[in-house]
Length: 145
Image (cartoon, rainbow, N blue to C red; front, side):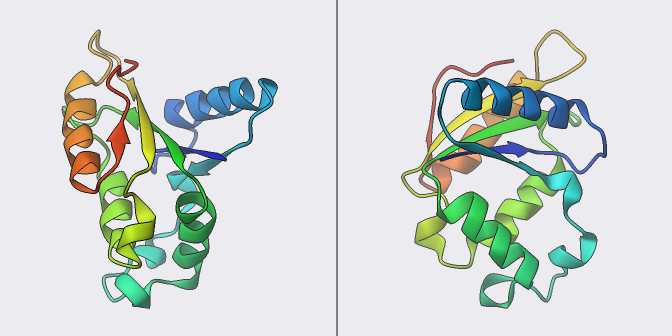
């Protein structure tokens, strides 16, 4: 199973459009995949009182379905001020404390960058690679801007 994370909380975003296109390509090839659209998460799920074992039930379910039970994750990253959307980093920070070893360690990741400019969010993908490497994720070295 492959999880595709549309890494922005902006509704009707290009990230969601690209994520759904990737989903279709993967499922058309016969593999199993699913999309986690961060735009569907509610602010209450990220309340600062909900960290680690105190995560909201919604985030626990999302973590189990989209993170624990997969070994490959495709991140679709819109460019926000030369980086990645804050909601993606906040999502990772929030869930990474609970059952740390099952979250990101030894998983494989592929990064797709989106930007109106010609760089395709190369700066954001590079910075996010560092975050994932710190968490023990193996990031595919070729990035797709």
